Length: 396
Image (cartoon, rainbow, N blue to C red; front, side):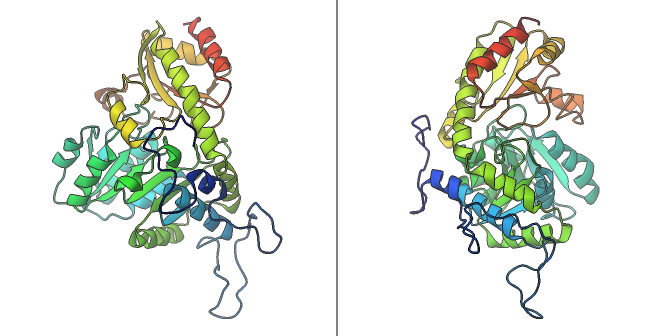
């Protein structure tokens, strides 16, 4: 990797290929029939059996598909996991993890979760008798204090969406292990380029492949990765039973995106560091949150467990909500849009967009104000991005 990567980056794992090679090549081989370098799109619903009771490894695409299998093996390789299961969206991945639980079970979750996850937990899973306790997991002791006899799972995002809170994964992992709790970590913001939670004790790692992994705003998808065969078998059964599978074409597009992941992520990080420093020194900005800044309360933890700080920034303007709206409506190069993690820079107002269904009182209680702006820094020329923000600030 680049010299920019922090010292904790393991470039080789257990004698395997270098991480960069894994990112580009995954576990795929040239197509045995044609020699095609890029895996084919097996756009089919079903497969002809060789005879009754004997197939060639595939019988129905809801159960398995060669293109999806290639993607799953590719993501497992770069995450450092044994198994991966691909779903039709990040939320389908989260929902499938919830289906590992049963009525009466209790989940401890970090308090700053993606708006869709909050909706899933509070408006759907509670209907099935699953209970949730939200804690600021930046303090690992709060996770331990929330454990009840019926607690079965710890759910962590790091860095979080949108406040970019950072959890000490090893500390929480020890608590989960000591109490026999299933430990799920959503690290969509970091990607396996910068953080691999399985190395810190996670049982399941979750990604929205819509974001950085595919990287081009071209699809919706999700994936879970694990080293535990029992969890893999359960999640495969859920995938097959529910049918929330990623399409062969979406899998193929994600494979193409993965091949440049490490190169893109370094540029996202490089640009974000410069923009975070620019924002922190701007007279109209009240506060900037970015794990790469020394002002971030968990900067040292982020530095210890991540090999880079990715491309997500949150900030608030001194003029509050109205100033934030004016800024977001005035940008020209930055795109006012939902989502994140693509090559284009996108600016978002979480309170009315990604987290619109989170009650205001709940948002304010966790430090998520009405004027918060989230910036997903792309890979454009950073001077152009700063110039665009400059002209927008001039109108605030």
